[in-house]
Amino acid sequence: AAAAALGADLAELRLDRLAGFAPRRDLPALLAKPRTLPALVTYRPKWEGGEYEGDDEPRFEALQLAMELGAEYVDIELKVADKFIKFMSGKKPENCKLIVSSHNYDNTPSAEELASLLAQIQATGADIVKIATTATEIVDVSRMFQILVHCQEKQVPIIGLVMNDRGFISRVLCPKFGGYLTFGSLEKGKESAPSQPTAADLINVYNIRQIGPDTKVFGIIGNPVGHSKSPILHNEAFRSVGLNAVYVPFLVDDLAKFLSTYSSPDFAGFRYLILVSHITYSISTRS
Image 1 (cartoon, helix red, strand yellow):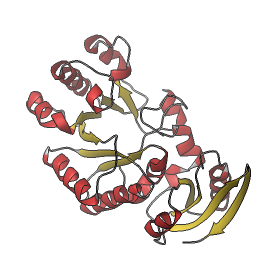
Image 2 (spheres, helix red, strand yellow):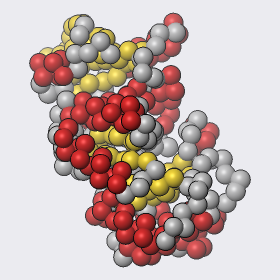
Image 3 (cartoon, one colour):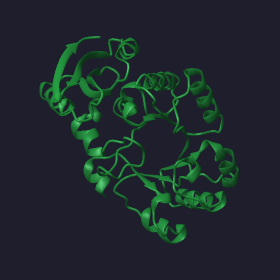
Image 4 (cartoon, helix red, strand yellow):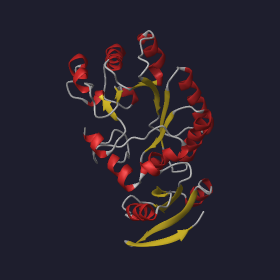
């Protein structure tokens, strides 16, 4: 209900984060209809960044029960996707989409490795592909954007996100490059992944519902950059004049590498933030 009030399109239920969770007792209540939003049910194990530490079979039983109770989406990890699909024995309801996910908490693989991972996930029969990686530098995100564009051209539904501060732009710009959805927390401090924005910021600060293929990207470059109020000011200005553009923070370690990577006309202009003796200077540039 809180997610619906914020303007979200669906709510993810992280079963592994519920204290004392008992599937047959709790799922009928959690998924009772009518619901204010469609539900995405995730029961993430410890080995994939979640909290569940038990055997696979009880977890599979809970996810299958969620499907039977009408969950619109269920997430299962690539490592056990074949095992889970075999466990279901063809009992997946038609109205439930299976998301097969892969999470890399160390880095973002090469474009070739990402393409191979994409093919592995597709081979499971996934309705939706999910790939989440970690940025060691902001240029890593460009490889995820390439995968999103490829999937859009091939009409493959994909959730492609890059975690931590250097990957933040992937969470805001995914609709521009064809991402199926992005995640936002109900409030700051309640994130389910590193550097996840709040749903309120995605909707109200970054105007994410207006972002599409033709949206121009502007932003402020710095290190650090998270303290900057420029995205709030500029995005409100873009909205007030009806400009199809978004303004984001770019956490950059190597400026030359960043500018050569994000040199397409889609990235229309940058401000460079320099902090010297606690005095901030701003230099404007265009790609």
